[in-house]
Structures are given as structure tokens and as C-alpha cells.
Image 1 (tube, one colour):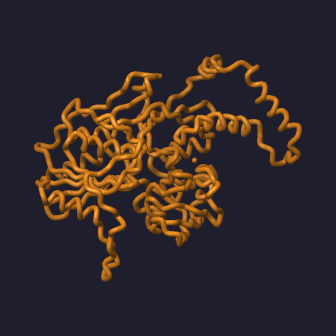
Image 2: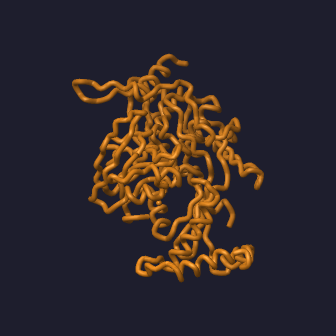
Image 3: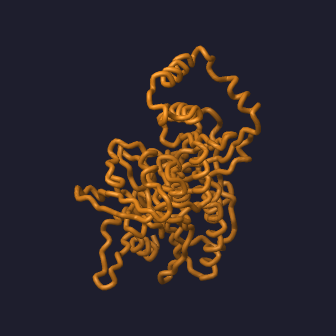
Length: 418
């Protein structure tokens, strides 16, 4: 099946995980990493397709140890009532094979988890609304989804989850942590958090609910039009076009694109959005497959909605990942926008999802994303032109609302005309 037939996604799937509660146990993440270019789905058309793939597998002689252990477990394991089924053992073997590549974004999903993954990519699911990942051995919050239970509870990007319902996460893998955070809609989960290097834990008890991934908001502050994009969903490019039409109709010439805590989504939508600001043929992002295939370059389509070039500032932070990093670096390195905020997450790999006949799926890293100047996004993320730490926010004693120093810096930069 050709690449052109695949739907491209750039979302933090895998190491980043949207915690869902459609199933009591089960992945993505969500992080899934929804921060990747995901080409989905490639399907085996029939059993013969699987047979053709299997013909290239190692001979049975090379698998003798595997079958020996299979039979040994059947013979020796005494607790037959809790022993896995043959199908579960096969899924476990496939998971072990996939995990042996030691790539956090390459994953195997049994059928239920594959269904969950697809639901999350579509943009609506049950859960607490967190993108989480494993960073330096710690379960880390990449971003809470705007308006989600986790967001409303006060969980922030960069928070370390040290306990889930009293169970320490220090020895957990990401899948175990995800399965503990998930649960039935209406039930509660308690997360113990360390924030900003503090040794004093914070405790959040959150009620799981149906979560819809928010997409876009617009606002006006003085002579500046603001578009806040929260996720690159299937319709985000169309929604962004509508917001941009409002910007044009407003007659304003200063624009802020807020990509903070945006974990990514569909690559095609990121390219489409960049195309409103870049001339036809301008490089948006490069795909490096390590020499396995020629480098792929996604370029601007040169949309002509804007009659003149506005002053643009893009806001990013540690929760801005994948498609957000692609869009912000494309606008910055092509000289049409300044970046304000903090270092982005650094999720710059491309995945392909292959759906298997029984409903399971494999997500495989097939390339790295490079910015227009050839820098790997995965190495360290995107560095803003103006660094402003969110921790400098100040609470208004009268309203209880915190200031937004990053937005204030963006407005100041546009006001200076630089």
C-alpha cells in the first residue's frame, strides 16, 4: 500500500499518553504518542498478505528456545486458573518483540487497546484528559487537555506523577501507569504530584469523565488577534481557516498563535496551517528515514487567504509537541514569526500504524522529523526567541486569577514592532 493512501498524524502517541477510561485497563498514548507522524492505517487485505510477510521470518530452528519456554510454562506453571490464554501469550510475545527495539514510540496494541488508540486519535474518549510520558525514568505530565478533569483540578505540564492511588510509580513502565490511571467514567483516581523540583507532594483526586479534545479558541486584546490551537485534530485546519478569516475581517495586523500545551495531531493539518503563511514550495518539515528511503520534504501549498503579511508571535511551552513543534519551527525558521515561551517537548519522530486482521495494531517509528534548517526536533525541542517562564505568574488577590507572563511578553513584543 502506498504512503499516499495513509492518513498522516503527528501526535504524541506512545511515550506521551492520553489517559483514557473507555476500558478499565488497556494504552496511547496518548500518548500514545500522539506526537509523531502517524500514517494510519496500513491494513493486511487478507490472510495471504500475512502469509507473504511470514515467509521472510526466521526458520523454526531459530525459534526453538521460544517454543521450549512456551511448553515449559505450560508444564511447570501451577496456577492454571490464572494462566494466560494462548492468544494472550501470543500478544505477550509480540509485545516483547516490539519492545526489544527500545523505542518508546514503537508499540503493539492488542484489539481493545487498538480501538482505544483509534478513538483517541479521532478526538473524543473517556478519562482524565492527560498527556503523559516517561522522562528520565519518571512518569511526567506532558500537558493537561484544556477543560479536562485534570486541567480543572490544577495539574500542570512538567508535573511528576509519583503515586497513583497510593502505588509508587518509580518502578512502573508507562503502560502500567496508564492502566492504573484509567477506569470507568464516574470513578475517581488519586494522583500524587511533585512540581517544580519541590519535595512536598501535592495530591489530586480526579473524577474520570468523557473527554472531548478541544481544538480552537479566538480572542482579541487591543490591536492583537489571538488564535489558541489546542490540538491538531481531523478538522483543525478548517477551524483554523475560519479563525484566520475572522482575523482578516477584524482588520488587525498583529497575530498571536498560542500552541502551549498542544500535544500535536494530524501532520497534514500542520502543513495546511503553515501554508497560510509561507509561499508555495517553502519547506515546512523534513522526514529523515536514516537512508532507508529518500528524504521526504513537506512543503507549503501557498494558500492566499492573507492579503498582507501580519506580525506573528507563536507561544510554545514544554507541553507543545510534535505537530506544534513542526508548525512553530516552520514559521520561525522561515522568518515569518517569533517564538515566545519555554523549550518545547521534543517529539520528532514519525510512526506508521499497521492494523492487523484480528483488530490488533503495531505502531512503528519509521523516520525522524527535521525542521526546515535540518535540526532534529527530538534532540532538544524548539527554543523560543524570547524565553519566559510560566512560574513567574502572579495571582490577583481580588479575582484569584493568575497573570499570563508569556502572553504579556508576546503582546509586548508585537507592540515593539520587532
